[in-house]
Image 1 (cartoon, rainbow, N blue to C red):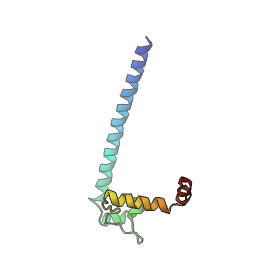
Image 2 (image 1 turned 90 degrees about the vertical axis):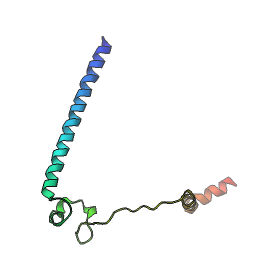
Image 3 (image 1 turned 135 degrees about the horizontal axis):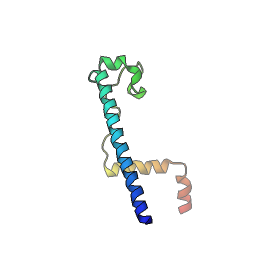
Length: 103
């Protein structure tokens, strides 16, 4: 009997979770459509007009919207990465003490 109660309780919880998930997805979808319709299709003159709605990290020093990529990554070979990590390790404050302890 106890097993049936557990199954019923978890079934009810699962339905509530799925219902809440669907409701949240619908709410986010409606809000994004409403936000996009007010924007007028992207970062242009409306973005400058609505600068208070834009995250501060997307603005430069003068308050204009930044249009270039915010993060650029370059690829490293495994040997270059290993060399850089070794240099960092050997320049750390505790590395000289550990080298003396190993000898």
